[in-house]
Length: 137
Image 1 (spheres, helix red, strand yellow):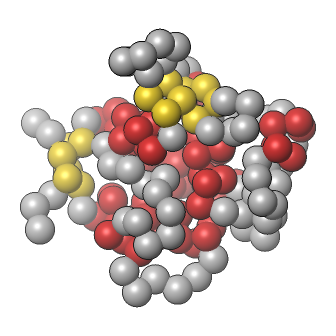
Image 2 (tube, rainbow, N blue to C red):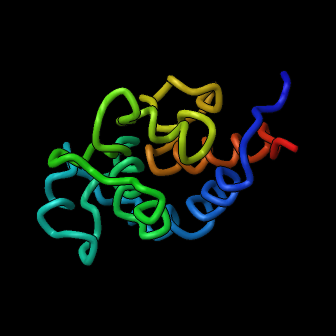
């Protein structure tokens, strides 16, 4: 398999998410949606333990907010105010990381034979992307 080509900014985003942001997410917080997080704002823990929670955290992380990531009322991340430039959900992951790691369980090559929590699954996806990508020259 050839390496996924990413920009230096996408690699930096991945390292920030893998080493700083995602480890700060409480792995045992589980909720059916992101409303608990939205009502509490960034100061409270995001009360979610699903793969979708990763997108919610990305829309709350200051480094990604500074790059234009925002969130819908239901917690879905987006970038850009108007179409066709507007990116939403899975597309935001492609902009931030160069690969869509927001997909459902089983929707990413890194998920093959993976057994573990959704929190661990996201970590596994980021580690996989780090190993299977390179910064374009």
